[in-house]
Length: 319
Picture (tube, rainbow, N blue to C red):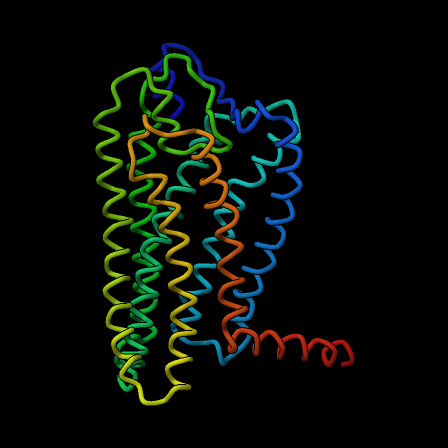
């Protein structure tokens, strides 16, 4: 379907795109490929560990870690969607990506970004219920609701991605195939179009407000209530625990929404491509690495689960 649409738009067959990346700075590409490979390995290891701990450790069978394991799985998918193609392009002369590969990359990356926006707001609601309604927490955030919220996040994110991908990839390109980026992304693809994209840009801005500003506002409202409840606690230890748990989530929120807002809440025509590439690299690579680091280094429960898992390994080998 996509290929036929492109052929009709351009009047000829379309073989694929050229991802320029940082090809004008080959020395930078060589250094980046090594750094990206190392960060990807650490990100894969960290997020896989959180998923494994959430499954095998009964003490982590709580709503918070159910949402966190979904966040880690989403981060694994996001890095795997973009990093392998980026490494291939950085290390070789052939920097092409097939049309189908570009559509798939755009669809998955856009969908996962939407999922994370909704999921982070869900996690903020979970923390609100845990801190502000502790006696009714398990009744409010019950397993069925957790599953419904996660399914809603995934359906909403990828439902939007279907629409955005269709609107973007059916624009006429008139033979233009050089993408000034290291992966296929909506604002960059709009710049390739040989027609007026004002409607597309307005629609992208509106969707960005829905997926960025609305969830961020809900998160800030939740944390406003949390901060007020924590300050009323008489126990200093209880305040430290609440601030520690919620502080981890809030730090992830600031990093994630800060990068996406700088990417999407501005007209594509005003983009500085070098800055945009750096922000996109941070969003697709560094943020998925920071998530497990923030949650594990600042969370005693996760560190305890990791020690218990490592402690059981020698016993399993002996048996």
